[in-house]
Image 1 (cartoon, one colour):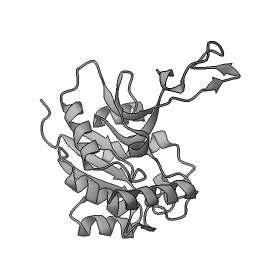
Image 2 (spheres, helix red, strand yellow):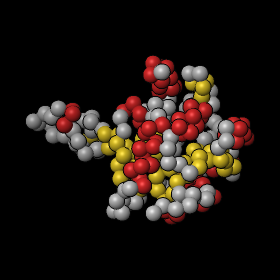
Image 3 (cartoon, rainbow, N blue to C red):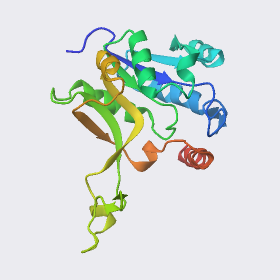
Image 4 (spheres, rainbow, N blue to C red):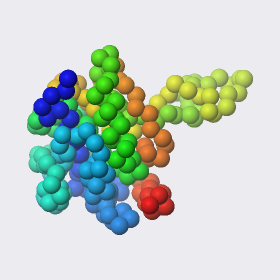
Length: 221
């Protein structure tokens, strides 16, 4: 059975972002991506603690004010020259937890139930799996190095029949903390794919993603 501080939700939040300036803290609806995610996670079930990892004082003090745990990140791990692998192993080695649920704040349309369900699945997951990864099914016609990857040119397939490809969405990935240090990533050798809809998975990378999600979020209220 999972014991102790079994599952800690870890929220990595950089102060600044390159493609959409200050995207985590700027106004999103009547909140911000960061505050919205904290509020969604505080309504989710199954986490023993929620910890925000950041190099930015303002983010850490907002987390503390709202009763969340904090990890003060060495600023060098928030620069773009440090490979993500180093960030994964560094943060995981600094956290007290048996399992880490790595959760980004850039998926505003993933609500509390989406997280509660992931934890529930992880807790009763078969031994053959070594991590839970949130994914979204890709039902598009894809080429790889000039060759069709998931379809044949004839007979032509309907897009809903294109199966077998999934993409990682980073809504939530759960794994043993020790494995995260060892693998230097959140992907093991036998992942359980936790499938989410396109909307729940929507990730804010560019300004148009920000605008789109803000609009959908406002409508859903």
